[in-house]
Image 1 (cartoon, rainbow, N blue to C red):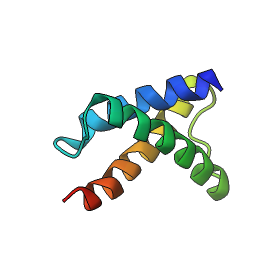
Image 2 (cartoon, rainbow, N blue to C red):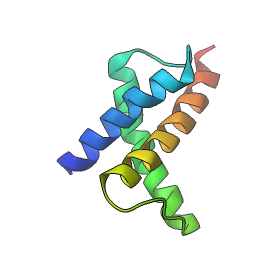
Image 3 (spheres, rainbow, N blue to C red):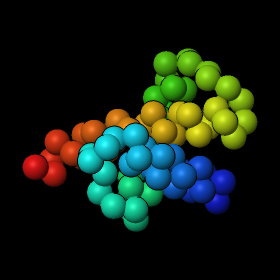
Image 4 (cartoon, one colour):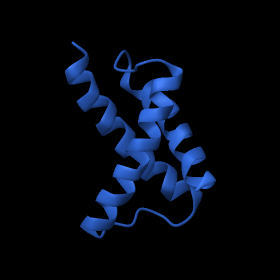
Length: 78
C-alpha cells in the first residue's frame, strides 16, 4: 500500500513536469498521480500489457496513467 502511494506520488510529480502547464501544483499533481497510478496499473492489466517488472515498470505505468488523468482533469480546469 505504501509502495503504491509512493510510486503514484512520484509518478504524479513526473507527469506534472511532462505536461508543461497542464499541472495543478505539487500536492494536487501527487494526488492525481496516485489515482493515475492506479488507473494506469488497472488499464495495463486489463489490456494485458506488461512494460517491465519492478519499480521501473510500475513507475512507467503510473506516469502514463497520471498523464492521462492530468490531461482529463485539465479539460475541466478551464
